[in-house]
Amino acid sequence: MDVIVIETPQLGDRSYLVHDGAVALVIDPQRDTDRVESAAREAGVTITHVAETHLHNDYVTGGFALARVHGAKYLVNAADSVTFEREPVTDGQVFPVGGLTVTVVATPGHTHTHVSYIVSDGSEEAVFSGGSLLFGSVGRTDLVATTDTVALTHDQYASVRRLVHKAEHDAALFPTHGFGSFCSSGPATGAGASTIGEQLTANHALTDSDEEHFVRDLITNLTAYPSYYAHMAPANTQGPGAPNLQVPESLDAVELTRRLAEGEWVVDLRNRVAFSSNHLQGAVSFEYGNGSNFTTYLGWVLPWKEQLTLVGDRADVEDAIRDLSRIGIDSPDAAIGTEPHALAPDAPVATYPRVGWVGMLQGRAEQDVLLDTRRADEFANSHLLGAVNVPLHELLSRMEEIPAGTIWVHCGSGYRAGVAASLLQRAGREVVHVDGNFDEATAAGLTLAELTV
Image 1 (tube, one colour):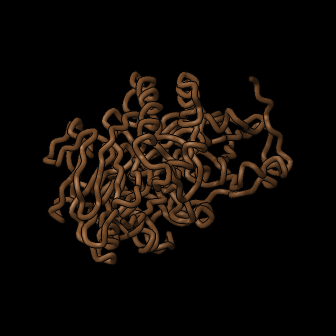
Image 2 (cartoon, rainbow, N blue to C red):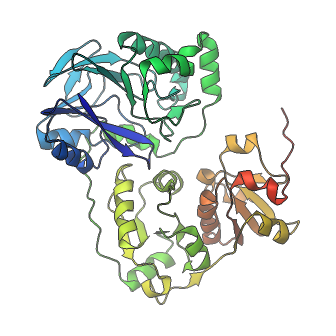
Image 3 (cartoon, rainbow, N blue to C red):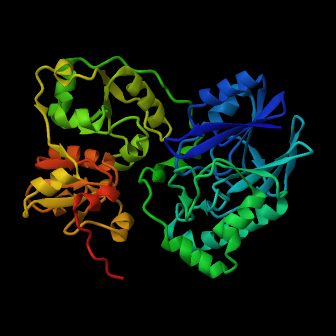
């Protein structure tokens, strides 16, 4: 048995190609399946089975389209309400994939119908746990419905314990979530690999013997998750098709100028330093690359399904189209280029100041607004004296709550603050982007607020 990992760090997920040297099972493929197909070609194997652990909440699956192209069996829980034909699987079912044996294990918790797969070649096992058992934690349990969260958390506690007892202690563990995904919960580790035995001593869902304590603790520590998640499971029940990853013809200057003037969403992919110093007035900054959470924040912040125009160099635009397709944002338009005046000579350009913590300490007037755009849980844990908290993902709907005056906007690293600064300027506010790591603020001389317990 060989397991090939297909990473999607932009969403914190992994997909898997599992094969015996001849035929392969694909588990939880992302929508851009060409990466999986490339791995299969390189391994010289035929894809005969495609399996889902659950109807995903954080991305649009490529499973349906991949199975159709390859004439593969598409394994989906028989209890899932879907509109397409699939190979229904149930708890305890065992079936062959070439020389491999696959066992289905019901593991509700992340969703009601979640399943895991234990794959064996006769001498070793691998456990594909989806959003059930993760490295150091488990999948979050509040994505189905608020009223179901407590029951699903109890289910999650029981499921992971049942799963580890059905697998060998030395079985390798391969979760789908837990590598930065908002689908994970609790103190997930950044480990690259693990085993069932290791999790038995390191995972709080397995080491906490008090189920009620585990349930309370997990639910208490759940944080906000992207709003676009609401659209993912419904899309996945329909059997989504393959994405169009082609870069469209670049918009001409007249059309780009019109879109800016009429307030359409024009997304500048350049780094936030370049954007602050020179950008098309009305554009918004979603820096692409450099480890940014571009896909997550764009899908979370901007209105769902409104037409987008991506502005940047061809490589970034091409990659951004691929990334956005994974969350169901299809067919954005594009203006290829990195010089604002050349892209739209008749459109006005804009700038705003960008400073570090020392620059804020020296330049901010007492009456100016200090805006913290981190999540509410981050703010509650620690924040600067006098700061106002409006999380980035709530900014468009809460603009009117921000007091009058110049806004000095910060976050945890500078990325979210860059997005927020561009949105605020687009709305006519005077902004200064504080581009720095929050954990360096006190060393620069800023004061943290005293927290009340």
